[in-house]
Image 1 (cartoon, rainbow, N blue to C red):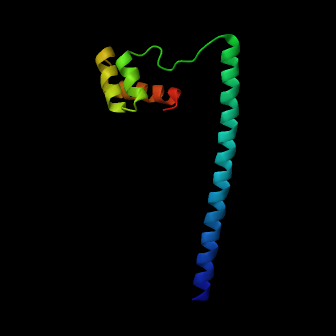
Image 2 (image 1 turned 30 degrees about the horizontal axis):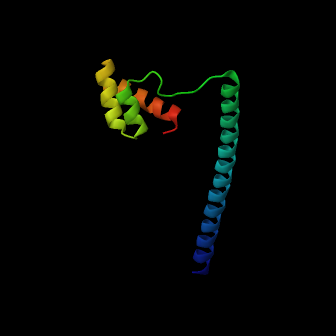
Image 3 (image 1 turned 180 degrees about the vertical axis):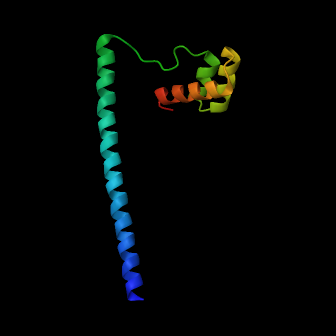
Length: 101
């Protein structure tokens, strides 16, 4: 019985250590991405450029993406362009990714 308890405790401790290591790794990656994002913002500003992920979208598509209405955005994009459902979904997901939505 004691062996089972010790084994269980060791398993829990190992899982906790693994989770903490992963959280630490993710935290470092988020910090790195934040620095890269800040550098890109400075470069764009220095070049006199602005980044607008919605620039080439029909207004109703951009509004739906901004509001987090993915299905509506897909429908509007399909109506505006005539692309397939799969193509529209992939495109809207790319826009969401670029926009940080």
